Length: 153
Image (cartoon, rainbow, N blue to C red; front, side, top):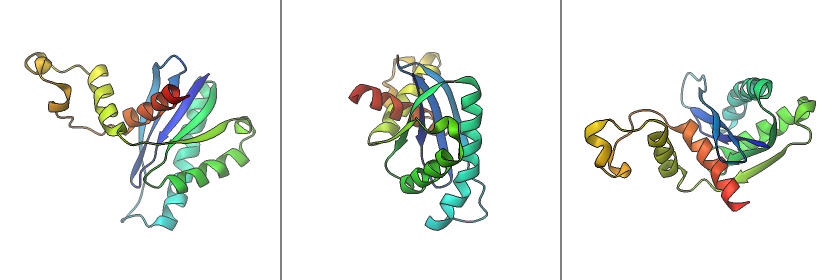
């Protein structure tokens, strides 16, 4: 069974597919198109189409048993959007959606980033917490949410 995991956000979200053995099989960051700052009511409308597109893309290549969703920023809107998508798509009817506590997943995401992108030579001996990450790690945060789910399962 693979896990589709979503790290929700107001301007972007991370998606990852993690196997039940803990291997990260897929990851992607999706930016939400918005002219200004999103208001709470608008987030649902802005995320529904990109979330449905990412789910369609993932279901072409992977069999998903569970969808995990971080429980902090905009999670209620994402949960509502996922509920709408599940109602429209019969492939998702048996898939359980689980909210996971996403505290400390940013640190775990940075560690996963460094695992997949090892630091170059002089930085190799520094603790990973001291090595900066100069890109978005929402996809790795989604993977960290799935790994946290597996650990607590």
